[in-house]
Image (cartoon, rainbow, N blue to C red; front, side, top):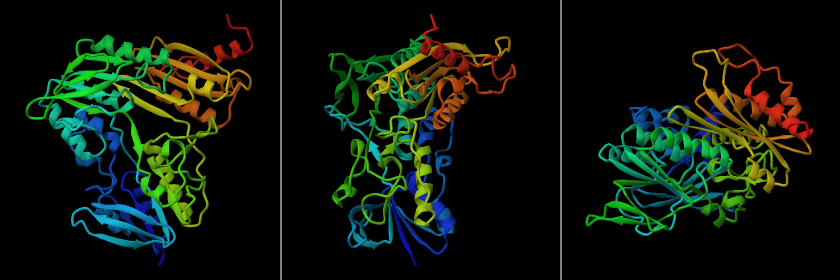
Length: 456
């Protein structure tokens, strides 16, 4: 009987296990995870903290028992400490008994994911300083939030935005510290400024945003509880708790030690079939490098949607079906209050870095006919290449229907559309869904005019 060992229980590992068990009942599948739970939605944690989701267990996708019914053996509290590719074995440490054992495999899947990045901040080990990765992290943060009045978030990415709303909704005065020029680094500065303006304009009494600043020290009381954050400017921010959301680091160390080849930002290098340089070893999820469809370069876009697709493809290829993964566009959407924030492809800065000559346009319009009572504004920015006219990326924000416009741009980029191709899209129209000229077509028209030197 063929033996497949999967290391990691986040998104891609369980997906590979579930798909493989459906494809081939004769394969023996063993999944090892160092956590106490398997197959859960970490993306839902900010919404649990907010209170939108009441039961933390609703974020569990499949239980150990459900996997067993499918023919997958899940081993909790089991950490892989070594890979022996020549012998085709892995060393597993039982975190409860502290005993090690060797497990043989025919095919190995590395789905070890990533861990929170902890900046070099003094006293980072004080109490009530959290990161957000596991269900238990979510429970601890929510419990502390409900006993607090003030919070500090270190980092200004998507998770920070979602946590910011969760805290403010629960009457927590919150300050964000972001070391770069603006929050949400995938946005160009003028778009990010609109987001910040919306946040501060609506919640100026409960939110403060510190950009171009960094946390250098956590200050504690006699009980080793954090009570303040010191910034590199000398400012002191009083707080009841801190969440560090400064990015993540891929868990690729054991793969490298086994002779594996790494890629961009120490992620695992894989081919289009998710195979590594080690024989019969696959990798998927947040630990692997992605191929960026626009830049044609290695990238790292750790998203649950990507992880699930990669896990599925690993299962297909282990079963001999030869399917490849086309790559990513960095398609992202997040939300603060009633403001949706979405982007895909390259922003202007990234386009320049990758050798394009970007031309862009930005427009603010209603998302449906202006006379409709529920019409809302959206601001849309489109980026294209001046010479090839290829669509490179887009960004959109607003209380209106942002998400569907971003989906359209994704499809255009994947289809190698030029700006003029987008202009000729026969988008569906009715007053409850769109203006007669959709904002996406308006912004494309402006870019087209710029390219042909007609726009003034």
